[in-house]
Length: 225
Image 1 (cartoon, rainbow, N blue to C red):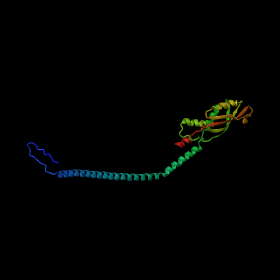
Image 2 (cartoon, rainbow, N blue to C red):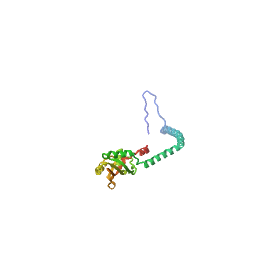
Image 3 (tube, one colour):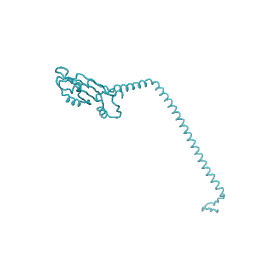
Image 4 (cartoon, rainbow, N blue to C red):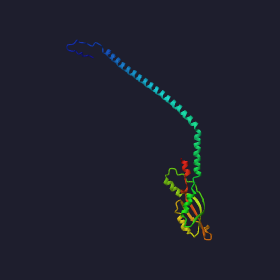
């Protein structure tokens, strides 16, 4: 291929006498040198990354070793406190056992005060035979209102009251009023044992059942602490 030589006016004429093959060889060498530099930079970058990863791994291994040593120290401290943990576990078990065993705990004075307050004028409570019912059922997750509602429907104390009066008592009317007393689940006249106990005195038997709102619940509260 013919090449056109540009001649600058007023300058010295120059002619490029290098053959085309030599020019292409030099261009290839220059391109090869560029690629060699790129490869060297890539190798250097890879070496830096590998070195950084090695240093980071070494640092991570040191941290892991330190944490393992710390874990061993903590395990040793926990082992030293195993007796305390066993004692706390035993205490928790005993509290749970007491809560189950004493779930039907109640205050006699509070129960009897409810009955005495409902007695007709002149009548007195002279005896009672009451037996606690089952412990309250577990009501985890329920709020106070739901627990109280469940306690009002559950069977608590049940038994018989003995009432003495100097005058005849309208037992049916009294039993109906007794059913309205807070904590009383049911009340019925025990006609088979009612009658005069002495001249001018009358003794009455009343079958009564209290709901579980009469239970104190104090042992269950202690078990939750």
